[in-house]
Length: 305
Ligand code: DGL
Image (tube, rainbow, N blue to C red; front, side):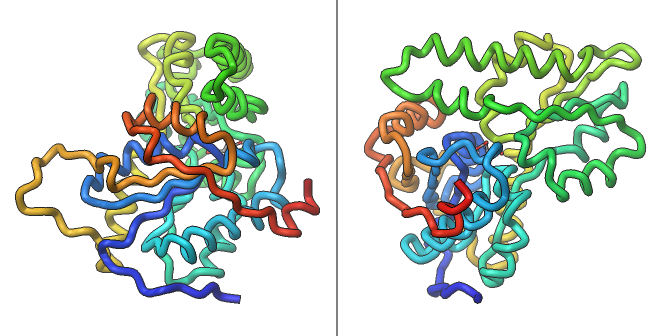
């Protein structure tokens, strides 16, 4: 059944959702592209990671979170800042909420394929994403000139999520992230810019952007790391323009102004202190932007656990 949808205006917020803190990397890009917008971000960290849970959990959970953002926050558009949830649930959400502009994220195979000189592209993603039908279609669409080397990175999103949890010592989880990055990149093959080497790596999970420094240290300066944040932000702008709900630019605002704390609300179903430390570390936002929220698990999601 189609969901109820209250009237929205250009001053309504944009909803952004991820299984956890990974989608903050997309929110970073959204803030740059749309500095005059309000954002409501929901991290389902109490249930992360989604990547190894399967569609029977991810689909009903994504629907419940989308409903929550529409009904309790009156969002005018929804960015699913999670490759895993997009792969599993975006079609279902489009059916449930036909009036809501929906923007999903998927691994950037097309730009990677266009820019790779060696025509060998590595792809890191969650098990849910890389085993999905949507991903198989993407590979088929862009695989004629490029060989994609694909790796399901079990545990990596969880390690990145844990690295934000306090009081876990920062070092132990960072070490875990680095070790997993090393294991998965070496499983992908040989990186470099010579013939036959992988010269481009697609970060097919929004959490992995926060492991960029580790990946860069492992792969060296020549390998390109590709993510979708900026493209998703541009697509969000286009969708808002089409629906006539883009927030107007204040005439006296400086051109490089970022959406500030008053315009951003961050919520988590998991550890509030972890969200607060991520907000400060990656978005330079104060703890006062963050709150805890309880969104009970739907019977279908519970049954699949
Ligand atoms: N950040 C998410 C993605 O882009 C999900 C990671 C997870 O929860 O496994 O796929």
